[in-house]
Length: 207
Image (cartoon, rainbow, N blue to C red; front, side, top):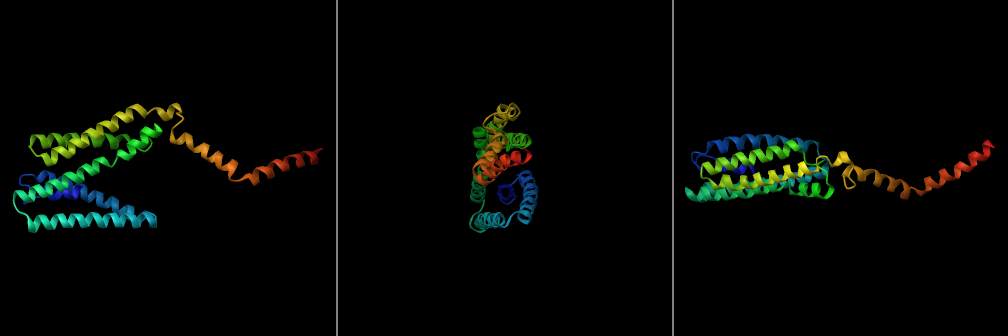
């Protein structure tokens, strides 16, 4: 998303929008470091999957960049890059929806950190206001969507943040011991029988 917003904010695409380009270039650089670290330390299967996804993203971005650079000019170039940036910005903000579903299902915020939700809300809110003040729908629309999703995440966090402390039955941590007991009782019956058979023999020896 950041590379598309960076492309949209360039002076020859969207004049007087240098702030958008600068911020998103910085973010894209930081995210590139994250991806590089993940590729270096990830298991082989996950590394292969990430490289495929990265290749797809770079291919789509290269296509957008080449089309906007050579095939479009003026307002057409701005609209094309703006729509691309908007679509991928909404996809970025929509990515935590799966985590929100997990939170609702398990009633646990274990996998939804508070500060990530908070700054998603703040980032979406301030960029939404910036887009409104600048009369730029390509900034306001996706970040308004992000502001709404950030609000929902904070609401979910407020509802379920104390659930693990109260020992809810559906929490992820509560389910783990049950699974371990199940495996001990049913996956290794031989060990249980051996232990039960050894107990009487030990008692007879002591007698």
